[in-house]
Structure formats: C-alpha cells, structure tokens
Amino acid sequence: MQFFQGIFSHLPTLETDRLILRPMKMSDARDMYAYASDREVSRHVLWDAHTSIFQTRRFLRAAIRQYRQGLPGSFAIALKESGRMIGTIGFMWVNVDHQSAEVGYSLSRDYWNQGLMTEALRRVIAFGFDDLRLNRIEAQHDTENPASGKVMAHVGMIYEGVMRQRLKNKGRFVDVACYAILRSDPRL
Ligand SMILES: CC(C)(COP(=O)(O)OP(=O)(O)OC[C@H]1O[C@@H](n2cnc3c(N)ncnc32)[C@H](O)[C@@H]1OP(=O)(O)O)[C@@H](O)C(=O)NCCC(=O)NCCS
Image (cartoon, rainbow, N blue to C red):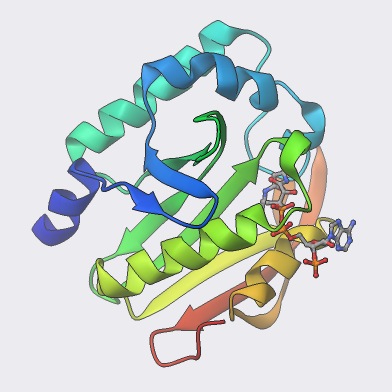
C-alpha cells in the first residue's frame, strides 16, 4: 500500500499530444464548475450536476485532501494550448493484493468527439501499467452511454459483458457494461 500511497500523494504531471494531466488545484474551480454544472455531462456518472461554485470548491478541497492522504484519485485534464481545465480522469480504486484498479473520467461537453478522452485514457493506462505496476485495469459505463464504451475499446480495453441493473443512478436502474485491459494485452 505504501508504494501506491507514495505515488498518489505526489501525483505526477503526464503529457499527451494535446493534453496535460496534472493534480487538481483550487484555482480549477471556475473551469470545473463550467462543465460540472452541465446536466448532460453528469447524466451517466454517479455525481450530480453542481448547482453552485461552492459545491465545486468543496469537491476540489476533498480531492486535494485525498492526494495528501495518498488515496487513489483523479488527474485534472487541461488543454495544452490554453491551460483550461476541461475534465478529470483517474483511479476510483486500486486493489493492492490483486494489482488491479478501475478508471473513470468526465469531459466538458464543449470538447466531446475530438478524441480527447481516448488520448487521456491511453496515457492513464500507460501510467497504471508502467508506474503503478498494475496487472488489470477496469472501466465501466452505463449501456445508454455508448460513447464511453467507444473510448474504452479505442485504447484496447476488452468488453467483458454487462452487469444488469448493477447501479441505481438518478432514479433509474442502470445496466453497466464492463471493459478491462491486462498488462499482457496489446495497447492500442
Ligand atoms: C464519454 C466521454 C468521456 C467521451 O469523451 P470524448 O473525448 O468525446 O471521446 P472520444 O472523442 O475520444 O471518443 C468518443 C467516441 O464515441 C463516439 N460517440 C459519440 N457519441 C456517440 C453515441 N451517442 N453513440 C455511439 N457512439 C458515440 C464518437 O464518435 C467517438 O468514436 P469514434 O472515435 O470511433 O468516432 C464524454 O462524452 C464525457 O465526458 N461524457 C460525460 C461524462 C461521462 O459520461 N463519463 C463517462 C462515464 S463511464
């Protein structure tokens, strides 16, 4: 556990062609509120759309506290070009015994369908295998959110099936599609 705590308490900054993945900071509040207050963005995730910037600040404070405690957390996704924070991606949990983890992500609607989350996920998977030394990385999506499954498939995650009505989200029982990639699988 100490190994993971060390990495999560000093989350590195990662780079892709168009993005910087870095720890979240309080000054991201305005950018984050701009997309986290959008009900279309929150529709298929387990958090509710933020209704005030105070809620966003509370979220950021909790995320930063999590870094300090060395718990699994998310990166801010920022555009290289403008520095604007446009989403998050990271680990929901890490299982030390099984060297496995689950990734999750959200992106501002202004930037959907430009291949940005595929780019971010590819980099986070490399971080998971190369830096965290994981063996298996999982991801899940609401079957009514097929764009997320496309992102998973694009990076080489393999579809493993559907867990029926696994979650109750915003008053609706949700079928959840599961994907995973193993260290030994080809990365795309
Ligand atoms: C899901 C999400 C992360 C995708 O991010 P993105 O940067 O737009 O993803 P990409 O551009 O890398 O890839 C999206 C793919 O889905 C496809 N797509 C978009 N809408 C679609 C739809 N309604 N049905 C099927 N495919 C769809 C795109 O065409 C693209 O595939 P392609 O590259 O083969 O053309 C983004 O829409 C998002 O943050 N949504 C809100 C939060 C969320 O749902 N998070 C995921 C929770 S599991």
